[in-house]
Amino acid sequence: MLMSGSLFAGQHDVPKTRQEILMAGKPQRIGDFSVTAFLVDHSSYGSVALLVEAGGKRIVYSGDLRLHGRKPGMAEDLLKAIRKAPLDLLIMEGTSLSRGREPGLSEKDVETLLVNSLKQTPGLALAMFSPQNVDRLVSYYRAAVRSGRTLVLDPYAALILYLIKSECKVLDPFESKHVRIFVAESFLRSMASRRLQKLISRMKRVEVSRAEIRATPENFLMIFREWMYERIFETKLPPGSRVFYSYWPGYLDTQPRLKELRAKLEKSGCGFDLVHASGHIYYQDIMQFIKRAKPAQLIPIHTTAVEEMAKRFTQCVIQLQDGEPYSL
Image (cartoon, rainbow, N blue to C red):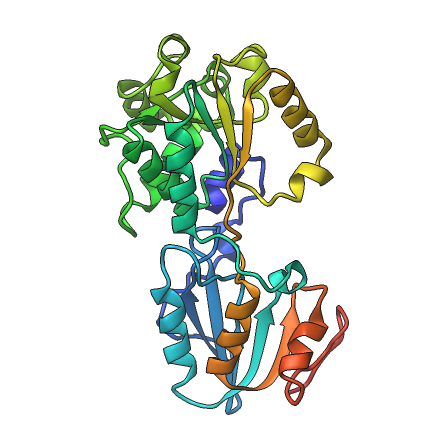
């Protein structure tokens, strides 16, 4: 994920000299600490929770996780490991605590909504989401198949699937009959293209052209980026097109470019649907997770609503300011 992000999204790669690989479920000694990584379901592939043991104490850092994705068994495995011995401290994410108590959509709900909307979309269907959210990529793929469309990936999404298909069961981007790849000219001139020469020939074998998409737009569900509206479609999407937006809704208010793009699309007659399941654990699931983990002490993180945990777990919640040290 780090490498693909550095190639396509301008993100920083981490030099191999600074990496320590943790194999999921296998304790690893790091100085005086035993550290065990547990894979968790989150909107970024490969996310983990960490069990840290030292000096007779056990600490779990939840990382970002959820219980409403496609892999609920991961949370069960983590809880089983936690319950093997008393847990001294749980450092628990609470992103959703400030978003209300009602449960949001699950990943299966997203798939169902997509299928229903795709069947009612007469033109081109366009998908805005991060390919590093592999659950969402699977949701779009399944929705495309169920609605009789071909999923059109870009090289970024194809690379991610290619990289992880040896680790988990995902579609092969170069072999699936329901997948094509759109290769933009700008990609062929990029640094990413120069570093991925061995894969470009495979992409070309399943490539779909802009002309083919314009000729039969109703046959495709295509990954869509902001820049494509002007540079690929020249601000003229096929009639009856619809954009499916699958990021956090707050970006539509806080990022001017997205706000402007949405306004342009809707003004042109293009539909714009918000279809998203959070990458973060929902309110009631947070409370249930903590109850089952039974920590002696609890530190909420990544939340503006610490009081919601404090009300339910008064005896064990430790409220800290950013940067404040705490001794266990």
